[in-house]
Length: 116
Image (cartoon, rainbow, N blue to C red; front, side, top):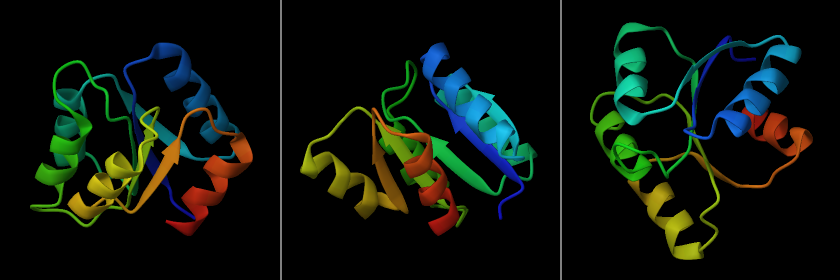
């Protein structure tokens, strides 16, 4: 099981919901609401898995995936409202390990973390 998860989500309600679920399951959770903050955390902190929204206010999540894959193999699970097959395929092609479409259940989120 993963120790520390970074949740990158600009919608505070969704971010708080995900953090609550993960902490309830015993995970250590760090969160960010922008790509810039996320990258800073990823460089300085020991993160085991990344949950990444694509629609961030400063950079598109696809750019985060691309940049992160230049130097890290951390598991990335995209959590996005974008449900087009082409978006999913693009994220996976850029290096995401999984893709979870909003809305999702607690059960599905935890299962995807276990698989990662």
